[in-house]
Image (cartoon, rainbow, N blue to C red; front, side, top):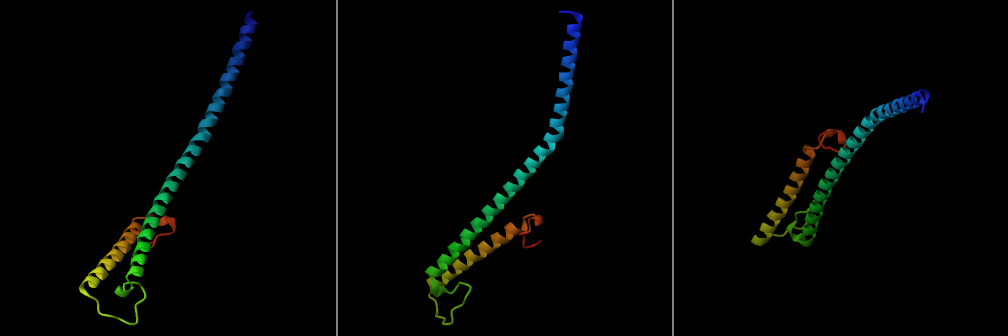
Length: 127
């Protein structure tokens, strides 16, 4: 090979190096914002999944409370009060107190979960 061939190869390799440097810079310039966007999207999705799990668990607890109200209609602990009231026995009074405790605990948990939610979700009671 002659000196001219080596110079052409060297020039060609420098052009390839320059092209790879440009491509590498473009990957960094485009890749960093894209990666940040993907990360923020994943964080938001995880937050929404946690919130849904919380709402779902609270809903299950409230449905269980309503089922207990259906099983014990004489205790009169549901939202709609009976027009005819009967006196309750001591075990029934205890069951009524337990049902009210379950309801209060469910409402308290719901309030606590809402209290610590970020206000930018648009779902919060306190926003």
